Amino acid sequence: MDAAFDNLDAMAKRLVPDPDRPTDFVAGDPAWAFAALTEGNVESGIWTSDIGTWDETDYPVDEVMVVTKGHLRITNADGSIHDLTEGDMFALPKGWAGRWDVREPMAKIYVIIP
Image (tube, rainbow, N blue to C red; front, side, top):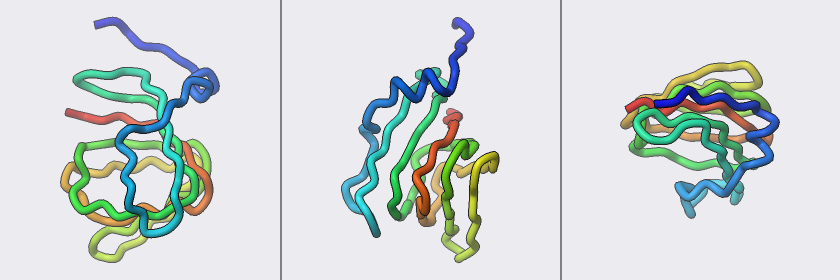
């Protein structure tokens, strides 16, 4: 396996629509896009979303993320709320349930762990 290197600004120029975008949103109709740094066993890259709200009932992966711009509000199934902005890091485990509320267009760095 080769090492992977890139630059966030260069990656932002390669964003493509996210094929995993759902069609049923609680609010809004946000565009989602991503640019991969690595794919395969461990996936990583950048991801963006416009303003919108959606529910997750069974998060499909273990994922670690860092918000690089914007404002995201995560509400856990127990009702606890976390407002995340530039520089905030968070992790969602596979099977997590809750709500994503993108309050300002956002971007994140992500790592999906097998």
